[in-house]
Image (tube, rainbow, N blue to C red; front, side):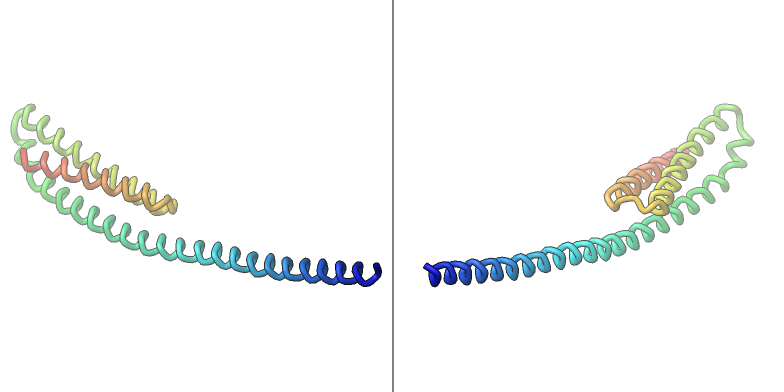
Length: 139
């Protein structure tokens, strides 16, 4: 009877030790995976953010070029009648909306918003800039 209890104790102790080692190894694997995910997500966000800053710079350059064009034709429209001024101001309003959308992208990047939200704001800003460009072409 004594030998069977001793064998049972040894086998139970061995089982608990093996299960403990398996639990420790699985915990290390889970922690390593979570750490890897966090690091890779951070790197991906940094790369995405860099691209988004490049797109913002392009949007600002396009806006500045279009703004110079608007300023160049302003005297000819303001020399005309009230209808000419209204047409010019309506087109200039589209340019102002584009600028607002570009500033919205800048604020999202400054606030470290998620990549998909910044991308949607960039898309909206491009859309508004295209509308402003079309309004200039219609002048």
